[in-house]
Length: 291
Ligand code: GUN
Image (cartoon, rainbow, N blue to C red; front, side, top):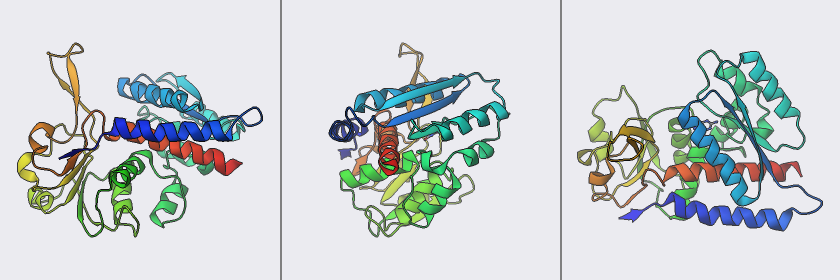
């Protein structure tokens, strides 16, 4: 079994990005600059944004964190977004999701300048991705594609089952895996909460991408020997043996499933760091395309 180590691979790629920054930027040219907007105090979102900012420092990017309270209004957030769109010293930015319930996420996404939308969430980018045109790819699916590529996991002609149909992961990764590309060219099934005979479907897969947000959902008996498993889930479960009283687990019952598969991502340390690395790649690209 190959452990698809997102930490190790990210370190390699981030070093490459860091070298690009050193080679390209200097006295005359400022480094790439990413901003992150964080509304409220969702602990998971805070941790994700902190890691994104830290990753910027690691590769020599400039970063700005815009942190606003839970009570921020739709109009105030739209003003922030408009300001970021206009800022010439900024190459890309993200608005961390989920947003508080009183904020209309769709309106915010539509207000983001597609040229700075390094999350690839704007319909311009999502549509271009679906059509196979150059675009910013959403960071998690892009991170998975980079991982499959670098680990040379065969995808051509394979049956790939995606568990989950979110706009951020399930739907875009299904599109990318079915594209005429490498990695890609897979025969893709999207399974979701209404899917019948799920175990039969997952057992017929050679690749499973689990993105449902249910801890330990994918069990040993749902997987055929030799399957490659990508676990996107990051779930907190109570564990009194840990100092914090909880630990992070994926959507896959890792300890049991790992003996059956050909390759698997751990949680934490699998897809998570790759998502941030993909965001850095998108920011680099936004920066270069402006030059
Ligand atoms: N929330 C969970 N994943 C993401 C992501 O990739 N980008 C943003 N902006 N919010 C998220």
